[in-house]
Amino acid sequence: MSMPKLTTEKPRIIRVEETHSSNSLLREWLERESLPNCSAIVADFQTAGRGQLGNVWESEKGKNLTFSLVLYPQALPVKQQFLISQLAALSVKETLDAYTEGISIKWPNDIYWQDKKICGMLIENDLAGHNLLRSIIGIGINVNQTTFRGDAPNPVSLWQILKQEVDREVVLRQFLSRFEAYNQALSTGEKALIHDRYMKALYRREGFHPYTDAQGAFSARIYGIEPTGHLLLQDTAGTIRRYAFKEVSYCLSK
Image 1 (cartoon, one colour):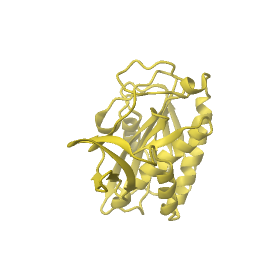
Image 2 (cartoon, one colour; image 1 turned 90 degrees about the vertical axis):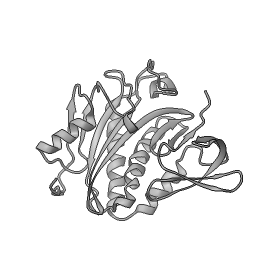
Image 3 (tube, rainbow, N blue to C red; image 1 turned 120 degrees about the vertical axis):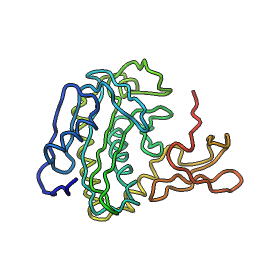
């Protein structure tokens, strides 16, 4: 894969009625044509939207926001790639803050309203040596879906929260504005600002809460997040436990 040539060209918004997966479509598109930084493919419907580790994202046609963006963070070391996840999650979180209270980021990058999931994302990073070459960031935000029929345990939409429809185009534009601002902050070296805001936005960021890992259930509080994205939990005995994604689960109330 050749190194993309970065320009100051305005990001492009490509709209499609239907696709298998916006992440897959964007990757295929980039094989044929270079796109400016922060460009996006927005799909009105995805027939097989993907989540983390192969999970399927349920989204009713014409009701939600499903899109993928491309980012070229070429000065970012591989060991700091979790900053991409942080800035994307913050951009969604702060966009939804304008509509309702109770929005937080559930590590690593799910967006929650209270104890329910309103947004998920799938981030795929391409590497070039010790740095990132390109990131493809797929995002699904539940906007106007009134009923969820799949087996996801705790989905929620803005419609279910507000009891009224929300203009998806407005939500998209608000997100893109925040995303571009955070990308600019990253490019000017404001990594600590992004990390600090992410930490303050975390779901269950204060107090002890129930978790489960391979050894069983335990109670812990969030101790920190490493630059690699590993979650640090401190249990009631004072022991610091370190986890990669999917190595620990939050115990959610039903």
